[in-house]
Length: 124
Image 1 (spheres, helix red, strand yellow):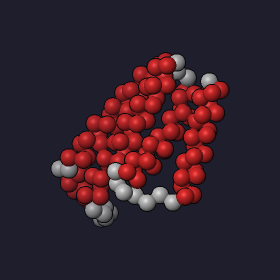
Image 2 (cartoon, one colour):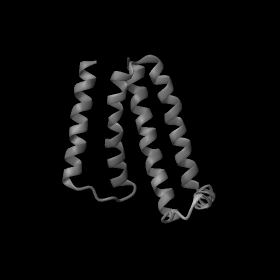
Image 3 (cartoon, one colour):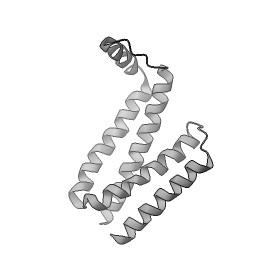
């Protein structure tokens, strides 16, 4: 169970970092405007030129493969809800790295998630 806890924690941290990196990449690209299927291809062609995009993919792939390993050792009914702590990591990283403003209500919601994760972890 120790591997499941540590693996889940690391997996969700990798995903949160990947989300922050992808957010940074998408902000560098500017707004996406839909003018048909070719606009998606043009946007994708621009995205692959941004280093933050590739770093995000690397972190997200790390999450994916670690998550597969975690699911071999622990029940999804436990690690699935515990992975909700990713929302906490994302909020903290968005504030620290991206400088996003997070209001009190969002912090309260994040706290509720933490309480839920603790309840599930203790019950496991």
